[in-house]
Image 1 (cartoon, rainbow, N blue to C red):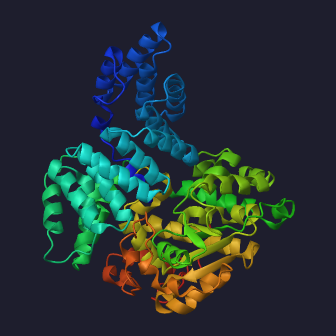
Image 2: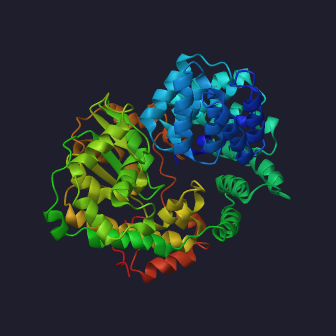
Image 3: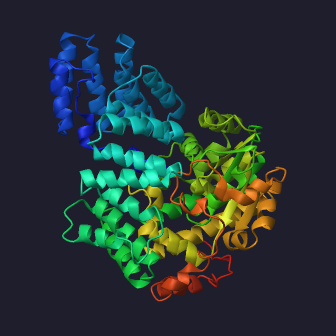
Length: 557
């Protein structure tokens, strides 16, 4: 979700030296080694140079770049800051620092570094591409597209730059430019699988479109990575679904996802551990001793399982003049994990949950608001549409007592099918359940039990909205949304598809269309393939008729 596709599509040649990059004999040699992936060799050269000349800012720069390429962002940022202290006139130094700060999720500082680089009027494509990635990650999509347009103008032969431009244009709603950019990426590199896959997702495919043929041809004797095969396979499955070939679409996803699942270390028990910790850690006794939270009424959290109408709801509410759509922010979950000293879901236990509750929740709420700046603060309200914030709804209710929380629900079969058919970030552990159909069902039960727990502990704090009702009763439910958020009615909220704000999610194309009902009960197209899931739900007391809200679900064992 969000802008990960842009941030992670930067190919290795993007770090090679150019005439406009910092250079020198040692630096040029280091740059050459980085360009071919020899990071250890590059670091050795830089360190040897710095032992003799500690003030060589070029060597510090390339040392930082080599470390950043290996994901060592904190170390890299330190070396890049030292390079800037020695010579602040080189835009690439600031741009690479911003890149590292993005990796560290320090968005405000990353934007400051990017702005400093832009002030120096860089004229090399790599630096501009880096700035585009930073601005994209920060939600500054207009700025991102502008610098990426300049990057491809300066270097029109780099397919990675064209891909990044295509993604930026897509999120800005500029679909014609996105298509042209993706096509150029494929023209320059026929194996540009991300761009080829992205083309299939830009619009609904028809029997006359060439997407199915191109994707089939690419998958024949596929010689790329399994990650890229996943991307192409999911894109082909989407095109097949568009043209009514549902059984073939499902089998394609099922086959490739099973192969991917064998390569990752995931067990549904890992997720169950966190859900149990939240259910047991949050009880009335624990809440009785909780201190006051931060008083801000700015945030509106839209949560739920992915692909259940969260983006549609965001577009409706953000069409209001007093509301800004800040995108899918990871700030709250990250701050909770830091406070709990938990790096991943399996690290959560009751003691860690209660340690956060016993901590300074006012400080937690303030830290969240501060982390959303400078993107927010220019309107009275802003929306954080990270679906997985449903995990932290209890913490949100305590740390930000005046925030609004809206939870989307969708038919359980449609929810699980949509999660199974959506290719989330392959690097994210949070969506690992989605590669197995029955794990999607198991995760749904966990989600359902936790949301019922939050509702019982915080009555009236969370508005539950049924997707099926939203699309059939648009005005009534839109008015309910605004009323819950304490906002006066504005007719523009009915014309959400005219909202020009960027959309950086998988629904970026759909939400620019008027309300449609064709996604209701879509699972019936896959009724035969979904029979095991239907039986699983039946065994756990979940009804799956088209109007069902999927209640009640069984308890966590």
